[in-house]
Length: 251
Image (cartoon, rainbow, N blue to C red):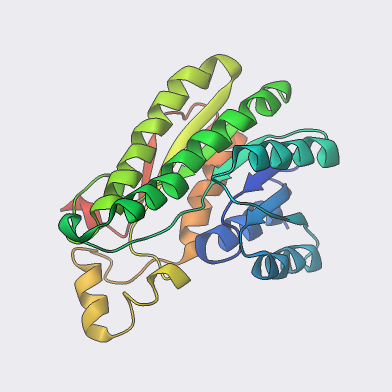
């Protein structure tokens, strides 16, 4: 156990699996009290049990991140239970792999509700609590597909591009409250979301494409960047985008 986040309280969305699970474990291991949320409560409770068994502090809350009323309840829980809120990690997201001309209206709306509107709702709901704590950090999980284009992912790419600029706009608006807002842009990370993409040697080679480190990333490698941005070590970092992609976008 470390102490880089000692005394801080964090909310992490989409915390039941993949990167969200890793973020929850990493922040808790550095001393944060974590309010972990997800729509998959049974899987989430396993993550929280893992945190608490390791000597950390976490609680599991079921949450639909597209519901503004539930956001108010989650933030209120953090303050009521722990007396403050210092960190929000907007991690929840969905992936739909379809070209533009095959994407339905319903799929477009769903991906924007989960990937973009939830970031707006969560950030807005957290501002009063973060301000009462004297400021804090919001970390939004975008993607390299929020920076570059790729085939068969138009709605996903558009949503993650929106998160990228929403992050910068939020940083400008919230600086007066001493709230820092930054985005993290993972490349190909080995998680349940990418299992199908990495199922065979051929598909893995195709997906990795220009990743110059020639392997998928591990969720923990993204969490290390999230930890930095959440901590006071990043006290002069806001409105920035951190790419964690093994060099994918460097060429």
